[in-house]
Image (cartoon, rainbow, N blue to C red; front, top):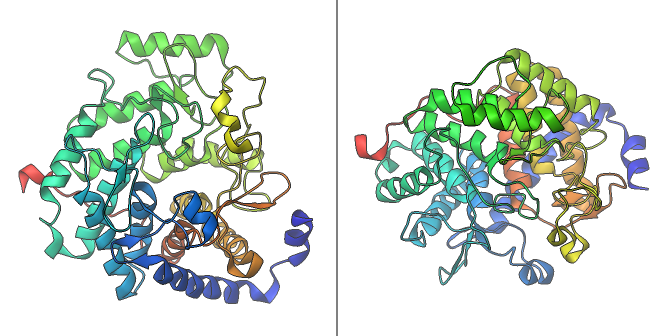
Length: 412
């Protein structure tokens, strides 16, 4: 039923009007979801309260800030700053940014095995805020230093890539662990923006480890050994592997991680084109942008974990295991725009506007990857914020991140 609705709708003359309408509705939703201490993950309702979505999440709020800061709305600009403040106030003593904070500033949560990417996204958003307003240059100085130090403590001292537990990033009921594609794409961007050491080694080892079928030969023998394990058991592919651990790895096709690798310059032009072709071949954007896994992990797969069945949520083509997430669809649009595919990026932006408009502008968190049934929370803030960010990039008014790195806090 849901697939029939989108295919029969067509785009016609409503396309530009739809994008304009989605822009207005996105700003309206975000303004509604801003509270005293920042941006909530989703609109307030009993279901959202029960699942703690009425909190200021580290990754959600930081991703939202990237779109809110350039929105033209003073309320959204201020909401982005107060979100970053709220997260900094409850930063752990060791420097980690919380998974989420209570909107009244009373509590912070750091997840079961730790939440590594909240700190990465927070630093990206802080950098963006300072680009928009240089008066903020020292506002989070001490918090930045501590956050960077905490991340450096998670870095392998030969690979210069971050290490993590499984189920400890945005895909928090997926079995990715060890060296994770998505996390290390963010880490490389942080190294660029904060001028951290060994960024060139991080980029080289990223490509050796997550694309072990390439022709390059890494200097480090341990990287070569991990490549050997993958080549023995895996099959060559154009996508980066979703993660690599000592003797096991992920071939499911992590769409978000691959898109970030394009956006942050880890994939060269030819590899970026091959990634887009591979994603098209997997039909991850058909009909909605975008399904977040090319080949979901089945219950009889060796990577399946019992916790993936929690709440019956992460079975095939659901949630992180192949669900359709509109906010990541925005990163698909931005990757297409960055590669010069402007017309196609605009078309995908129109599709994204339609997805957000369904059920009277519900801004649905995610959809089933096959049936297209709407799932998750209504009024998802990062759907709206990333749509604004993607539109600005498609129209040439913004890049996904500022291109000029700032000095590290200690060097200012």
